[in-house]
Image (cartoon, rainbow, N blue to C red):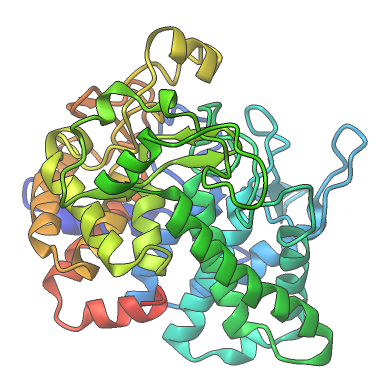
Length: 456
């Protein structure tokens, strides 16, 4: 750490040193620049990790790397392997890719979950890819790329996979554990909020960018209908405030027929003790997951913040979500923004929810750890909802500490005071999240252009 260098300047050094080149063209950023990285695959470009870096490049007008990334990821669809005799759909995009040399020739190798722990397919990659495609088009006006045969075909294949009919009666998307940012077993199987927010963003992208030609007619009808039903479903069933909590507390169960009120058969006895008194008249949030007989009351930051940014939450809900942060700052923010999920699973519940995962011990990693890569989502959502005061506080709290600690991947502890015990240093999305947050707060006009690329 150079004493003459500011945190922002050092963050840019991390970003610039992370750029991944393929045949002399920038195609993405590696996950971490740590020469002693704990994870062996952090020299790869992960689709989800690249998003804050991509948004920084867009704000800087450096869009060549975004275009190359979008086309590279799309082209890598062809590398899908048959796994255990099972051929996956062509609409699945890779979790990550790397550049390797083969007989002196550079080639790209993609990972579709076949190298990942648990071998779970990356559901969120295609969702983020679609959101970034729209951001690129809005920022550059390059509709020619979006309307090209390769991109139109890619969007169709993604939609055909993600809109495929299943045995679900809910408009929410059903996914397994470990299929998105929370990439290990954490009891998030089913209909996790983060996936629903990203799904909604993808559908909005498709409605704008999929050409209204005959072969897309049925897909566009499905997209329009799913947007409406998903939005209504999440706002009705995922939302929790004081009034809704009281209604759940008094629900009747085992109701049959079309007149049932408790259509998902949620038992009031599943309400955790900590929820009583946790919500004020001013606060509320979208619960982490919901399904038949199930409501996950845990607070997941990314799903709530993305719901604000993509317009899945109402304006009033957005205000109440930010009020919850304000009222429970020590619990949801702590010493290092931002708690990924609250509360952590502990005791016997930790054992069966995580499968005794030693990386997800209570208040570590994805089980209640603090992730500074979420800072940009929090900053943008706070500005969106008129709570710039919270954004300034979070950034001020994180800036010098992240710089001093050499940009760790995550923090541990109930208040996020400890550098993650298995965290990499010089984590790129940690550094770029600070860059984005600072830019949004300090540069006049940046917020308007940023809102445009994120639907608002």
